[in-house]
Length: 420
Image 1 (tube, one colour):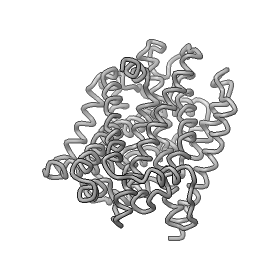
Image 2 (cartoon, rainbow, N blue to C red):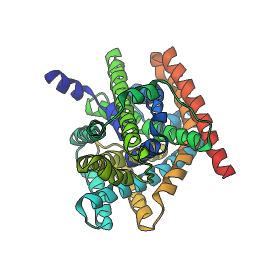
Image 3 (cartoon, one colour):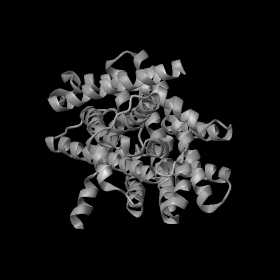
Image 4 (cartoon, rainbow, N blue to C red):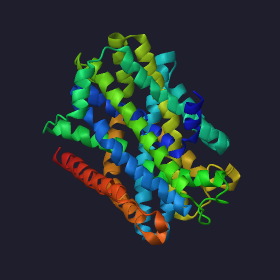
């Protein structure tokens, strides 16, 4: 027990980043995957793990080695047009995702406590702001790590219901690909949900936050930290565990909804639809676990979505940044966080369809992910920036594979919209 506790203590930005990827919008995508296609897309959880892990390790290493966030490095070494365009699209995509996540959390709280949606919407928005702005970073980082336990609710749900584990295992290890528009589009949706640009920016910046916290830097973006091989090893383990955990949760959500919703021909559009549908099929406990998981993951993801946008905007304009700073020391940084959450809240107040919003958010992510991935790969192999900490052959292999897969996914998504 003590060893497990010590191991968990060593986990940091990589683990938190991986967990935040399973936000309510991700839960909706994975639930829909299981409900529509049964176990036939369970293999995607296995496929995306090394892709996610390699990109997040590169992103984290950029922050660790340079002492700057991703946008800060791009600002220093690449054209401003590239930086501003990427940051603008990131802010738009993150704001849409925040809106969908806030709506999903509020709707889940309404299901459990039978109190008006509007009340819970303002409650979760204000709670997210309070935790991110007023809680000191050292405490806040622990809170984020603690919230990752909400994701175990999806693992527990899978063991409450009856699963044909032989069928699950075969579907996971032997891909069953259907050449249909719906099947391929859902693969694109999964890729867009798991390999999202906000994760790149967040992980890089959080590694720098950790360096400030560990007194390796005086402040973010100022100076070059001294790092050791042990730091690189810690980053690699942290990131690998985080992405494994993220994809494990994705896997259990898919197989849970496949065994219940797909088997009974139940269609869903939102994560709370999945929670409600589980109630008569798997019982109240399964419903409650699923709904509580949506709330917990939303509280984890919304601050990270807002924070990653704020890091990017602040670095793009050279503002003071960092969760370790108090509000009066970095008003622009915290102002972007407030603005992103307010815009997300307004999405729900003005009746914007969250499913449509997430669909177009996926389009934006699909468009900006490949060029950002290419930039990350180029930076990670640039000796002027990374010194001796450039990528090894394995990271480059998975990096190139991820760029190819995401480029094809983005093209398929754009063509599907154009042909619709």
